Image: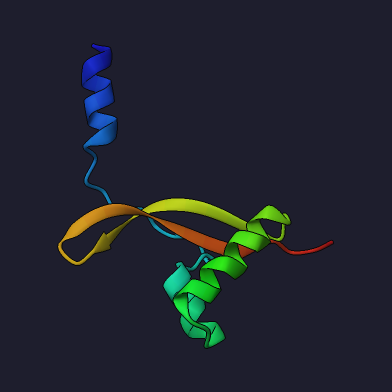
Length: 77
């Protein structure tokens, strides 16, 4: 019974809707006009400083569906 639930959780083929404001590191790179490696460093530093939120979403990449990290800025109060 638990094995079936575990299999279904891992084998889901549904694409998740990415909420507004979340972008992949490649999208951030394009928006910022920076290299991918520099953008990933900026995002990592932002996450560590608590200024950037990261979440994984199931998205279609080519013909497959996989989890990919998305990032958004956390609004300062």
